Image (tube, rainbow, N blue to C red):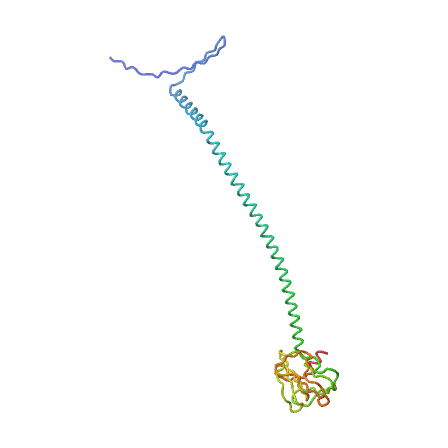
Length: 244
């Protein structure tokens, strides 16, 4: 009969000894597959170390370049931030200057409005017929007519004057007094001056308070004075009383 021979894997023996006079020798048996694994692992480690040594310089150069780029980017961003802060400060300063100018302009406008209102009030006051229609003193009586009428007897040399600012709208003849002058004051008031003297103004003339309308002589000392408000006759003495 044939005998079948089995192939056996021989173990590897590792002997460890020292240089001492009485060396202590130790033996280790290692399976072949374990030794192969150790050899493969050592090859991998050695290969990794060689690769690391080969590519280390390139790696650090790349890292250095990247860090440099990052530093440059940080410096650029810091510069932009500084420029933005400076621009912000300039804008804030400009806004502050504009606010100061606006405050000054607002104050100027308010002052101008106040002055205009004061002037308007003065002009309105100058257009309200409250002044006396004659220069100098005069005797006064109420006339008998359908409309309120004040009759003044003035002294020679006096002057019939407009009692407020306005515009002469009518200059015509008058049955009782010879002539009449109508002054529209532009605010609903109209004053009427009746006298036998020569008229000094003409239709269309602008007058102010105190403008001469008639000169009082020996033959025209009597003045008839009337007033209208919004087309209705009113008592002139009511207006004179307002002025005190």
